[in-house]
Image 1 (cartoon, one colour):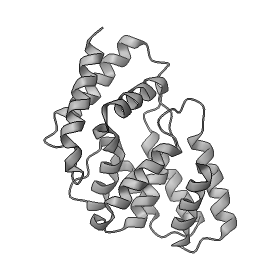
Image 2 (spheres, rainbow, N blue to C red):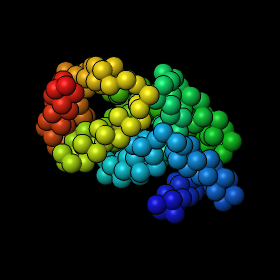
Image 3 (cartoon, rainbow, N blue to C red):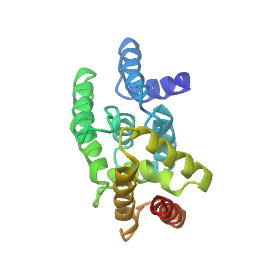
Image 4 (cartoon, rainbow, N blue to C red):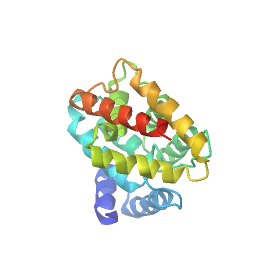
Length: 205
């Protein structure tokens, strides 16, 4: 998995002519963050899946490489007990771009901050990024159940009643939206079905 992801990272940074020593150093740091204890869903697997979706939606993006870089870095800082993961990930992205002389650092950071509210507005790059981040909601039922279980594992420190209540609130917000996806409209129905089923399960005990 890491070899494949390193190749993807190398190909992306090649766009900005980053030297190979820095490609490897920065990859090791990013991979290390995504392999931290307590991560079950927010791993490099999630990044890989997002990149595949971003690629499939690439024709919609204005700055596809910035969206890809935001996909890599949007969860680089992830602590389920913290409320500022997106802000800290955005800061990490800006510092990284500065170090690698990538001029899109501010754009990448802005895209990452959009993942806090999952509100893309009219920004097509944000629409591609957020749809890719939420694509899991429209997965097949077994894949979605695995995702839901992994999220619960990431919040292992939260007592069950609190988790159920908090998770239901988050899911209900998505269900109450006029639409979950901007571009992945074929997944809309499955996503709503999966979310409704999880809410029912969470309310069932």
